[in-house]
Length: 206
Image 1: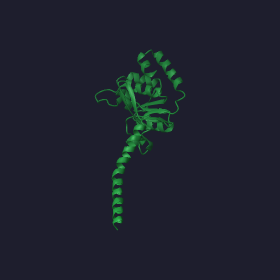
Image 2: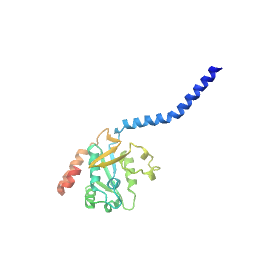
Image 3: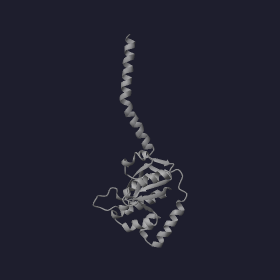
Image 4: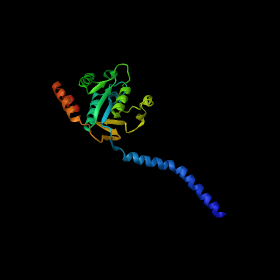
């Protein structure tokens, strides 16, 4: 009889320990996996950039967005081997420090401007879905989660920081297979920029 009671007590204690410790252990394992997966290779080789978010992120409302941040983002993703599709809101030219530079990027096809009075977010997500690409943005896209449920995937919507002219991505993604036309496309862009003879562009787009 005593043995049965002891066995029951041990079973009860084991159950209590399991119930209380399991969530903690689960979180610990998940964190360890996340840390191991910071640097990952993704099957996508197309990166859709939320240029308005990148240019304006972290800026005070009284300050203009930075075209340099947009150029750094384009350069970073191209150097990693992604085909870059950069999309901006039509209103960005009124919120950025050098609208003439933005106009030049649009003219060269480096940035695609969304139609006026329409949300660029839709075009960004629709393009990423159709191209099976990743999105570079710090936007949560909450209002689009029903239409694009994959935006909750941390490997499809990549977060970033730009510090001292360098872009950091989380997770630190690279394509498993680089975009084939990257070299040719970059060379054509450089030729166009050399014709314009603006050293500023060469520094960031080459």
